Length: 137
Image 1 (cartoon, one colour):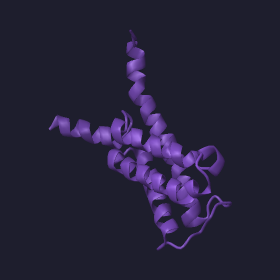
Image 2: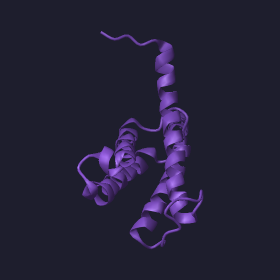
Image 3: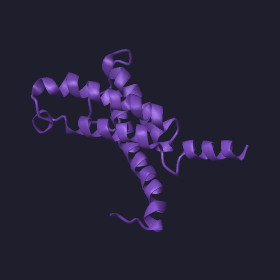
Image 4: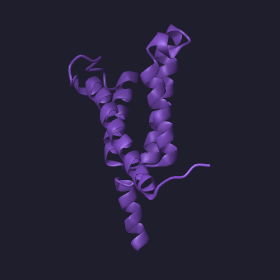
């Protein structure tokens, strides 16, 4: 039997928002490296109309949308798929275990985004704001 306090219930949705914001900010930087070579040290800049260019656009745009919590569920679902494809195309051919093929971040992002696709954006998001505005009508 588990019990939760009202304070934990209150902060659960807020911490979901914090997780989404931090993940979006970190993920957006992958796209920034690919598209703008900023911060320097990544793969970029890459050809925009290439597979890596598409990944960069999804990483940057999707990360930005996640920071604001806008269209969180569909964006997260797409990004989860992106990370699954990235893992199986770039990492899995190098070996079966993520610890050995440097695929841990891709796997972690994949399942984090899948969680956000199911859980939603949390209390501090434009998605929640839009729902509150629609409920007032």
